[in-house]
Image 1 (cartoon, rainbow, N blue to C red):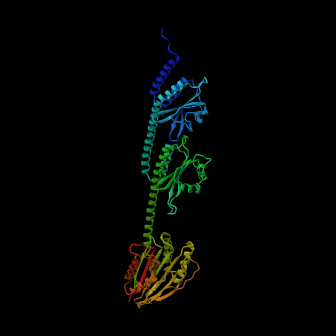
Image 2 (image 1 turned 90 degrees about the horizontal axis):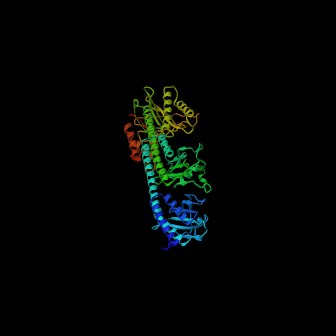
Image 3 (image 1 turned 45 degrees about the vertical axis):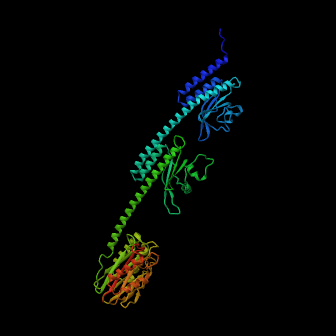
Length: 577
């Protein structure tokens, strides 16, 4: 009768069969959880062990994640451990076991290695019998782990591939969402609609209930941007502190508020409003907008792909809102320009449409505004068959406010012209009207006079205006300066009347400071001397020709392409021979 095989050989055959069966079982599955759990159960049952844990290496954080655990109450799947000083390719026993596992009474650690890749560890507690592991048992469990490493590797690859597919699907979904949003954003320049789209994207895509969106507003070269709040939700009614906006202006990278204990006090305003993420929106190298968000309603943290989506969304919202602001500004500009054109047309109709004729006189006049409307005023009114009233004035400032004040002065002069009052009384009354109806910083210079053809006299009052120039036929020059203070300074001002006689060939020129203060490209003023020189040189010309000569000389002085720095108005009166 043949002799029975020794028990050791039966155990060896049983171990080989167990290894083969376990290998076949694990290799047929690509479920990582199934593979690791069965690896632990097989090892624990064959070695009579009640504690086991499978750890997977995380190369990003250089730590280990608990992927499967049996019989260890204080460890949970998903928990992360750092195993200091471990030898990744060697079996570790007893004192060599890392402290993070030894505290859980793990006495045996086996590396999971596939090729050159370190996958993780399998840790086992001591045997139920209290005996030490035999060499055969160590060989068995080492072989088991080695054979299972391929299945673990394949399961990891599949899990990573599935995760990559999920990430790809999420990325495609985000791109589709951004594409749809871009079409929506580009389809409107309505700010309210754009803000509503941003709100829907934040709440619908990321489930964010609190947010604050700020945009930069250019204020000058020294400070390129100062943020203003465009839209906010769930952050309270209190205005955002200027210090917080100032700090956000300086932020160039993402700010994620996590640790309250280590919080920078600059961001207390964000925390108080429940905001945990501040994301700068960069455009052409500058922080042009800021998106501040509260936590997700799911409780999940913000992931890198969330930040990418938010950055793209923030840029999209910024560009669209910026375009909306520009469109609004353009519409407002066009509206104001149209109003200014209408005001200019009205003002032109208030000026003399045709200069009245009077025997013995040639008259020419021009009014050139530096803007759409002018603060200069001139008038030539025929009082009767023998008398002509001349007036020229200049309001402090330019543009629409000055033109409105000048229109009031024109109305006042037209009302007083038919009255039987002296020039001095008329100017004094106009001064009282200006003082009573304008601000303290608004003044008017005025020179007005009456020419009488019967004796060729010109009686005038100069209320602080540039003195008119009287060029005699022989080339001598006189300035008409008699009068008083400019209008709007002192309501009780009195005025003095001056009188001159225009002999045949004499030229009288009334003008505003837009003539004498015209600037050259080098910053030099045209001045009274140049004006007098041109007038003397062309005193024998007709009134229109003399006016053209002065304008041509001013243009040569300032440069043909230069814009007027001030309104320019001039009246030329020539006594015929």
